[in-house]
Image (cartoon, rainbow over all chains, first blue to last red; front, side, top):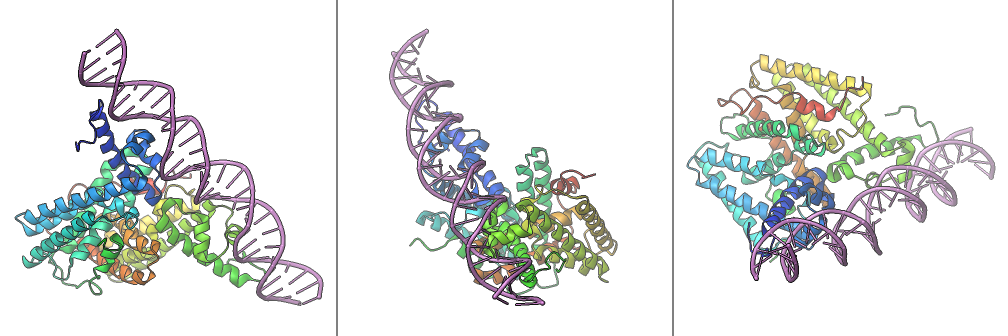
Length: 223
Length: 223
DNA sequence: CAGTTGCGGAGCGAATCGCTCCGGTATAGC
DNA sequence: GCTATACCGGAGCGATTCGCTCCGCAACTG
């Protein structure tokens, strides 16, 4: 986290604040949607607005940084999933990780942040790894054959945004958060079981086209 | 839909507008969240702001009416599910119906509308029917035994809010809506398969307590 | 044509927005 | 302990958006 930006007398505090800001932004975005205000983010992080604007020149810059970090997390989880010796555990672990570290909280700002070539490359790389994970699980016969990588992406997105969790946080019921996370873990497990190759009835309709997922997150190639 | 409120010379137009307003409110709430503005709702419905305020005295009154209608839809779907001769098809049909008619779009305003005693009664009735549906499916051996009615409620809520669909609508890509609905249907089918009694591994953790669902939708009994 | 009823939207005061700017505070070196 | 400095918090700016009111107009009936 120490990227050398802070070299002053209160470096530790600055970096702690930066970290708090990013996490607060995720939470506020999840509960307030795209209209999340910088004041709300700063307040949730427990820092002043001034500190936010010292680190990020605009609100959009903060959101862009958030997107970039999310892409990194996605890719790290994907690499780990592919590296796992058990094909099914690798896929399940990847899905669970993506859902739980709040990937879905960025849905409200998808399509509003400028996509840098670097982000584009990371995104493409992530897609490739996911495709490999899915292909491996299918090849091992543990994944229902009609499941596509896009199905998995959409499933992660769907599970990632948790209206339950958002609402609990908005009401300030921190005492319920743990139970809500546990409850969602059950839903994740249910959905993952639905992906397994033990079912007889085919899924309805043809697989969704890639554009469903792609076109919304990346408006245009920055090429 | 003719409830006698309009007896004037342009009754038909008024009732058509009312219907359009309710549907528009659902869509705008889904994409803008709790901050959805009356102007946006009126614009989406294709009517003037004045018409909205002639029908509903305040924004909250509109949202309350929306909640009441949602409860009715929920209960109708539940009755139908319980009446179905096949226990599994009844449960699956209920879940699918609730997800697809946009139950989830109300998540952003949950906990902000005043709960009338009438709504409270309807809500309780709906819970009872759902419990009966779940009990019947479990008794028939077609539902994994550890699934509770609260699991089903949370699953409906989770699937009902579709970040994918919301984003597509926000971007005005009406051409993608149909594909998105079809893609979500696949996710519903996957989740439903995960509920079936054909699995070996138990779900993680204990079942979620009822309060997880109940306490957020109904702040306090209006007793 | 006269009478009635619902329609659309300009515009009100209040609230909130993103963002700037600066006085204050904590810390490292002496 | 003192000074210099790097970072902090939040009052407040102009602009925007909010929920809502009000009224001139259009559409329909008899």
